[in-house]
Image (cartoon, rainbow, N blue to C red):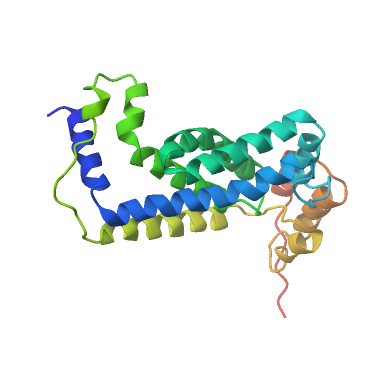
Length: 243
């Protein structure tokens, strides 16, 4: 049996499961809820967040806000993708449009260590990937493989599967926990949103002075994240004060 045939059967089996269908609907609604308010803010020409321009993400969003109709266009695309996701007939198109936008947001959040979307954006990428896999029987015809006609792509079962896919949802829960842990523990220091929040992570650190200098470098002096991180990483460790 070819790989394509195995994928077809696996996909048809998944599509026959009622709970996996409910999860697809949940992902569509959740993703749409994430883009609708964000897109409307851009369409109305308002700045997306109140982050100061000294913050790396605030500096980026300020520059983006000043791009004029390009900023508005991003909002229109976001709202369009969200609306398409909410309509069953256009949900596949919505997922396709949504994916490059949320992937860009995810990479941006990781690159700038922005805690506002540091956890949510990777989870949104995974939810979007689930929707793309859910509609594999449609999308596979744009991939470089040879398949049968589109009308015969989805093998429809006459028996409805009502069993709860416990292993699948356990995997979803485990994935969420792993993503949260990797992101939470993966960075020794982050800019945080406010100066006071940034300094909170300096308590008990073996680089307390370097940590405070890093926070000032970001929030007071508005220096690039890379240069502030380089100074922090180059600083010598300090003895931790004991009470």
